[in-house]
Image (cartoon, rainbow, N blue to C red):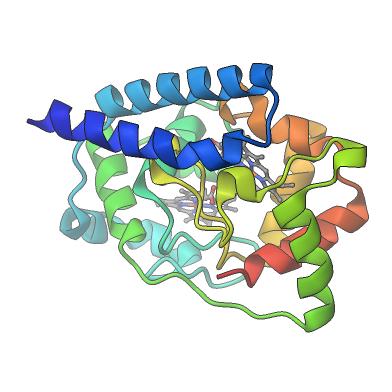
Length: 228
Ligand code: HEC
Ligand code: HEC
């Protein structure tokens, strides 16, 4: 029963991609489909079932930085509230195995079991995301780059993977990026660009961030933060 349900989810997800794919050339299409199927099948078999209640009880140490409900106390720490459980799980595993390198998070993720990770992810994913706002100048310029990319510079539209409202896509572990601190988004885009962070499947974020200027990053991080 579970398998049939998962297959149906996969099919409906692939159908929703047709619109995005129309804009891409055939090689990119094949690559994206192949990588998506790999990610989907991997994540389906790896996932433990998360218990949000248990996650709440296990989140004591995390709340010192990420807040009791996943809204962090300062912009040094990312908000976790409302993020997809599948993405949160992947990040915690990536920290634990140093696929995503960060000494602070390594020290906390190191001792978490697969079940702890699933429970914590379930808890934070169910909390209400933050809402931020920016001025109209940022919205107009940000929207152009976010929604349309820049063909002349070979920049893919961010919305192709993160969605028009920045909500991401749980099944493919594309993170929700709205409702996040601009300072954190900026550091992540810079880390992807310098390859200090290179844990995205098939280097999806390295390719696109490599072409972003400092000005693009500054603009996008403010725009995305307030997207909803
Ligand atoms: C001392 C502060 C601190 C504590 C405590 C802490 N974190 Fe973090 N967390 C951070 C920082 C800083 C980052 C960003 C690191 C980076 O740039 O990769 C982060 C990143 C994360 C991310 C990635 C978010 C994203 O959007 O990619 C997750 C998930 C996370 N933490 C979960 C947890 C959990 C679960 C705990 C408790 C077991 C925890 N953290 C404890 C500081 C902390
Ligand atoms: C081909 C798909 C794809 C495109 C296009 C794309 N992203 Fe991403 N992005 C991802 C994936 C996948 C991840 C998660 C990587 C991982 O597993 O850590 C990610 C992660 C991120 C993160 C880190 C989120 C966090 O919580 O740490 C930010 C910020 C981001 N993307 C912004 C952008 C922006 C801005 C653009 C457009 C310039 C963009 N992305 C284009 C797939 C994409």
